[in-house]
Length: 190
Picture 1 (cartoon, helix red, strand yellow):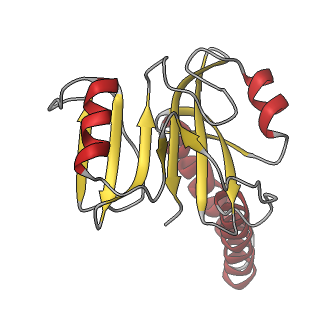
Picture 2 (spheres, rainbow, N blue to C red):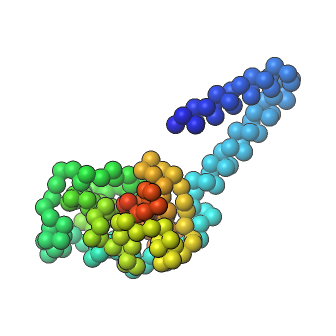
């Protein structure tokens, strides 16, 4: 946030200098051009347009798949595996997928829409992706198993590596802290 504030101040000073030393018309053209270039850069950086698709068809976190219906049997299995429902998972959960219900276990969060799982967030070291990545694994292991077609970014929750299945509209995101997986997010891309 501080960097954005400093960038805004530098930009305003730059605009002031342009207007003071150049004609108003030339200054406006330069300022609008800079804003346009920044908007293009923001769009390119924030979109998934340039990230190649990764096949996440069979991806899951342990036995939990996106699209699984929350039946009484599945709910019982989840409680047996992850314990009782809690009010607070103890995790920062930042997902953009909307859901109409959620189930919270210790270090596990399930987002549900129309009684089907559409998001799974885990900080539980006993939960693994379908290819075996779990909390505490390093970035090298992720890249070896999932490849190099990912989007890397710094988000509110930290450094993230995101694999995108564009055909199935699925995201698999690894939140990294000190070069190790800290949180795993499997979600639909809405």
